[in-house]
Length: 132
Image (cartoon, rainbow, N blue to C red; front, side, top):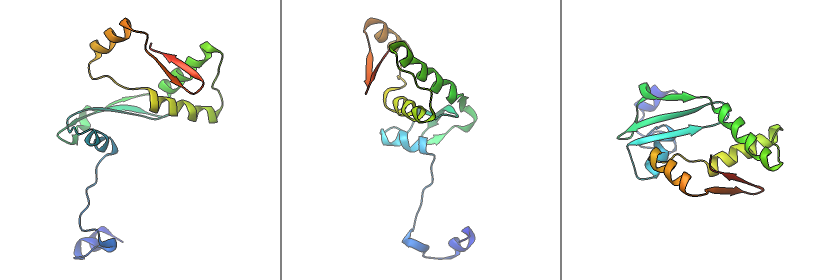
């Protein structure tokens, strides 16, 4: 159904009277009860940081990075302990590791200091990733 016919209809199909469309990264931020911050979104082909101010993404300030580089780097970490991820199916495991174990700290200097002072390690099923 075309948008123009939806606008003319006083009652759209499925009884939807209002809809708000937003970028998923804005919704991630709202889920953490904040409306202003930077969000990093990463998948295999692209990673990017998006600054968000009062619930609106600042499109002119989006920083695009290579997601594949991050994936390949994380795939190399287990080789130090004898595991190797080379198959396409194993790449999905690496994406899961990135999604569950990687994070961006709110204060870079504090994160560097706390990492240097402690042995941060995170475990995912069969291997342990030390802070780098």
